[in-house]
Image 1 (cartoon, rainbow, N blue to C red):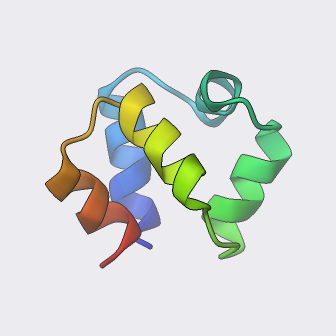
Image 2 (image 1 turned 45 degrees about the vertical axis):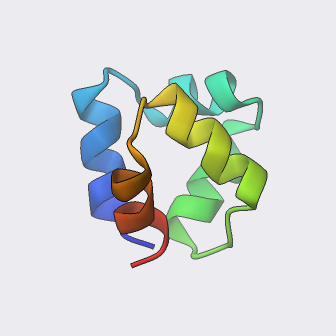
Image 3 (image 1 turned 120 degrees about the vertical axis):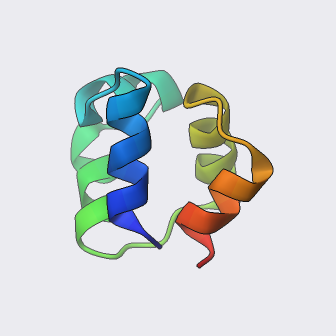
Length: 66
């Protein structure tokens, strides 16, 4: 996972970790852990983030599956 690309898209779309966590329905500590400690995002998490940040399939693939 490319955390820097994810954080860049979050800033671009006006989200911080707390706001994105609320938008996708997870606790902010869970989102921090998945971003910074390398815990795996579920397919559902990826889909929710893709929707929340209005990512294209290519952008989501670059972030989560590079």
